[in-house]
Image (tube, rainbow, N blue to C red):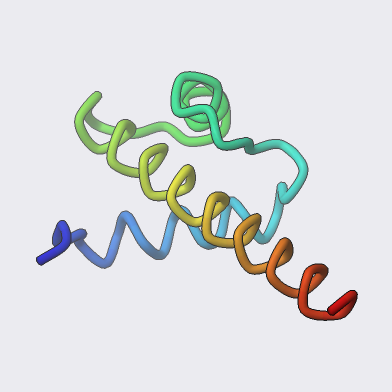
Length: 74
């Protein structure tokens, strides 16, 4: 089974990706710094959870876009 994330983490991560789609990458450390600049989180753990979920979502989007490109050329 996968990790369980609270709704606050998911909602915040999706909102940040919606507002700043080009700011985040597949690098967790980079995303952690961006979340630190954009959101005032009450704890380091929450910031890291948001950054980790953003990293996860970016990787999924990249995988989907690569499949769409390879599917279109096949």
